[in-house]
Image (cartoon, rainbow, N blue to C red; front, side, top):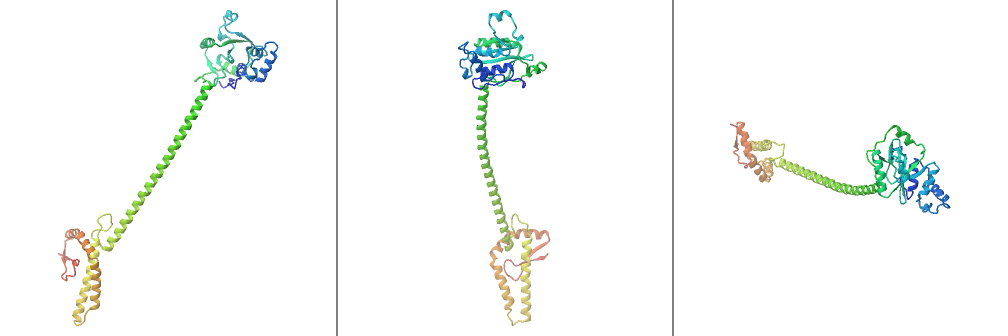
Length: 341
């Protein structure tokens, strides 16, 4: 199919396209056809009518083909009908309706509609050829049989060896242009929709990034608050109830070490009183008072800590075979010590 010469419609040059598609090459131009019309000027006054606009009469077409030794005979004329020739045994036809011309030609062993208003050659079967010509006549076309030897062409030689196959029939140029225009409009609308979707998608992505950033910020704030709680709990010796690495015994051990230190200071004070009954241990007593003052400054918080952890410590000590015995020196409610049972 690619080897077939097929001129598509340009302006009003249908007569030129018809002749070139018949001869399978660029044999005629508007200037050459106008020259033929001028030669017929003194013979037929109507032979060149509207030649300047690209429309040419049957006389101009017929005289242009005589250069190649070709003759036109009206298909439905009595002279031709008496010959009773089957259309498939001819070589080509020229069809005319008012000011429009196109060619139907046999290439190889197959027939083709070379209408310049089609997007490409249209394959016509042998069985459909007679019906196709009859349909054209019914629509008002004049059908002419081309008699004589057409010039050799590449498509005819190639299709003598290989038959052409056509999966889809060509469409009219106007219909194809309308479809292309519709496709361009649809493509433009689709691109606009995609651009709009891309913009909203970008907004959605930005919103998701903002939400993730806020979530991470809240998480960092929670972690900072948790670390601050942990530091305050360590300073106050208060065991944390959730999310901490400290065991329930570590705060108790720290308080126990503190109370043992206080007991050692008290024993040292008693020894000094026995060795120097007249002297007032102002230094030790002052240090102890200062320590007790610091301890009493945290009394409320330590009281809360003891209350929270006392039950846990009692259970742990019972399992270890120990019990809590309060000291006899009545320092305060926090002063107690472990004694083995």
